[in-house]
Length: 368
Image (cartoon, rainbow, N blue to C red; front, top):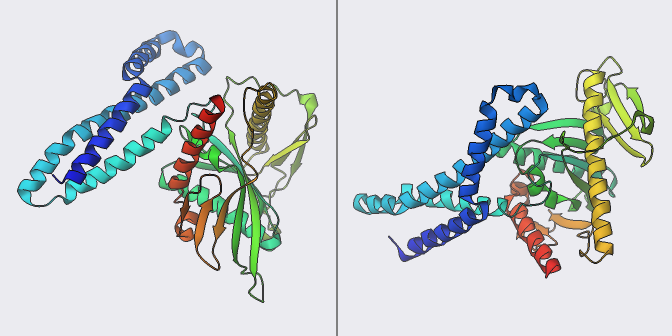
């Protein structure tokens, strides 16, 4: 085995050992046994909501325990794989396994940094076009594709709740959910203004255009959240769903728009076939927005008392330059790549990891 390979394996072993201490394998195994006992109780389903919480947590904890123990088994097998590779004179299989392990352990290391109150939850993403006219609307649609492609590559289901199409091209706004554990924790670092610089495909003179789109990331509300919205505080309007170019995609007034009167927050949903389903989805989006509003208000109160630092990262967080050179750069972490096409096709893991590490460093500096 090459000294460099041996050093890499040793480093990964050390990293995994640290992860095992952080997640506390003994505590995880104990929690699995407790949840299994609860799940085996015939009376559990007398309370369906509680039963759902138990089975969901059991599945999540089992998966977390299995992931760490599987990685430990694989890293313990690596030296043997390299011994066999030396005998056969071909280390390609072992090298591939080492690269796969490195990526998996680094990804798990980032996940262990997600310990915020809502980090384990699914994510609700709102994208709005900003300054830049037609290009901004097109840019908003490009960003939506980037996140949905990222989700698809990782096997996460995406539910689109609402899209407001622009007249000429692109979208004015979109709201969609990405399902899966820790989606909010991972994607919350994407919040802010995304800036695109390119030769505008909508300009007859081929001039360079700068356009902006705003990304908002919210945690999906769960049944345990105490977000009570009285009927007297909302106004519900129904309208006919429409697609690009104003073409009707529904012959009935099934789309729903809800206005929260105290805050003037407006949400809408037109993805479902029935008015009842659209109203339920729109209420879920509204609850997520109010939950985030409540969280930000509590954070602001703590900051006012001197318990925290700056509550925002600044509005503009990433630049995507397609002309006169090729580069995507995060303005907070300084992480950058020179292949915008790959990034816009959903390859954003490097930006997510850098953002999560940056956020943890910021939190640690605030607490010192």
